[in-house]
Image (tube, one colour):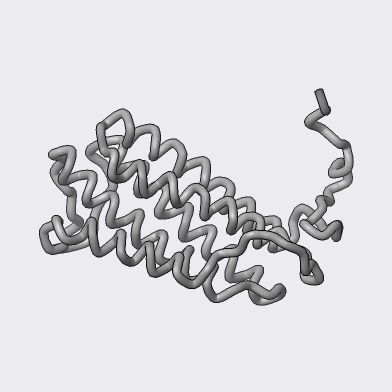
Length: 182
C-alpha cells in the first residue's frame, strides 16, 4: 500500500496540476481548499437530507458534489497546463437555475430575511451557503491573478442561490416554520 504522506509539502509548498510548485498560501490553493471544504459540508447535508427522506434534494446534491470536484481540479491547474481535464461547462449554471426554479415553484413568497435554524437539514443548508459564498470570494481573488473560466464563476455564484432555496424548500418539506428577521 502506498503511503499517504509524501513529505513534499513540509516546507509550505504544494504542486498544482501540471507540476508547478506553489506556496500553500497561493490564492489558487486557498480557492480550491474552500471548494473542498464546501464539498465536505455538501456531503454532510446530503447525509442529513437522506436520513430525513428528502430524496429529491439528495439527487441534486450528488450532482453538485461531482461538479465541485471538477471545480477543484480546474482551480488547481497551473497557468501553463494544457492537458486533458474536465472543466465546468456553461450549461452547468443553467442546470442550477432549473433546479432553483423547480424547488421555488412550491414555496410561498419570501417576506423577509431568513434566520437559519429549525432543523439540522435547514441549518446545514445555510452552513453550505455561507461556505459557498466564501469559496466564491476566494475564487474571485484567485481570478484576479490567474485565468478562471466564466462558467466556473457563474456556477459557484448560482450554487449559493440553490443552497438558500434548498434551505427554504427543506423547511417546508419537513414542516419547519421558517424564521424571518423583522
